[in-house]
Length: 173
Image 1 (cartoon, rainbow, N blue to C red):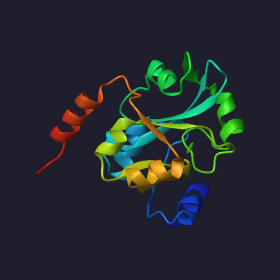
Image 2: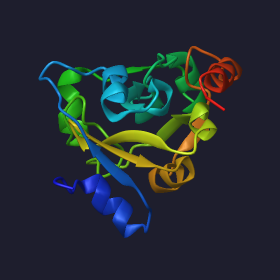
Image 3: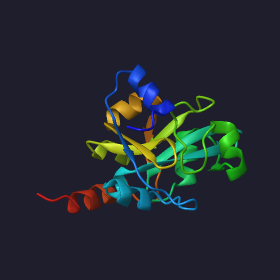
């Protein structure tokens, strides 16, 4: 492993097993679907970490599968706020310490509340950014939830039932 990120150090400190996967990344490439292809996982198992702000001016992380969109109304409900929206791109690095495409909840400048889409629990292993573009960390969903102190909620525009069906149909026997 050539990159020992803060995320990896935090997981080491918690005694959590993980795997680091590195991949080549183009300067303007930010798609979680492309990341999934490069690390050999289905896009629904590669979770993207989005920094959002609520109407109450509270910053929160929303962690959703790479192949779907965050539903801001559902995030607001989970965060007990009137509404939620993405943080301005110019504010991401000052607030988290991470650049776009490398945001992770682990080792962020502040411990913002973390809300994770419920589909996370459908998988044996998930992937999230390791805190650096071109580096992902793979770990068990329950370990991610524990390390991130995350709240599980329905956060996407696609229902969990539909996701489970598409996940099942994509698995080989």
